[in-house]
Length: 219
Image (tube, rainbow, N blue to C red; front, side, top):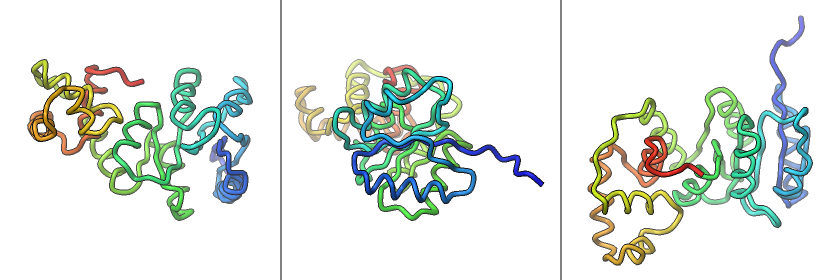
């Protein structure tokens, strides 16, 4: 009896050759997974992709020379929107996750994860379209679920809209205060007021709400 399951074709980009080869070996040991392409950085990866033989999923490192994970994810989404993107990072950070989300990643995983979680991430992205692990991950997944389908857009003041746009980037709250020429305490006030107003519980929630309701461009 033949196995009817489709093999998941995977490409990888990581400038650390030993790490990349080790990850490729782990992935190839997973049932129904096969690494079809490896690259040293995002630019090399994009140069090697062939339109008639594209992978189902691409695994990217964040920090790479020539073209890092952020830029690579953004260019991949523009050129090959059907390819799923999983990014490996050493940071479980709201700001890193926000930036990766806006670049086009639909999965974020810390590098020291267990192989079983690595496989779970791959399968989850292929079956549901996303996977986020850890504290930040859970917030992201919950926000994405809670904002589908779109809720009616809540009327916002000009100041609230400006704060929301800035909060949806990867700059810090302290930097937002400087840009808006207000105190950090006032920024905290805007944030704390918008959480219940928009029905979210985190900064990532603000960003996802803004993107899904067309208040900012998801780039």
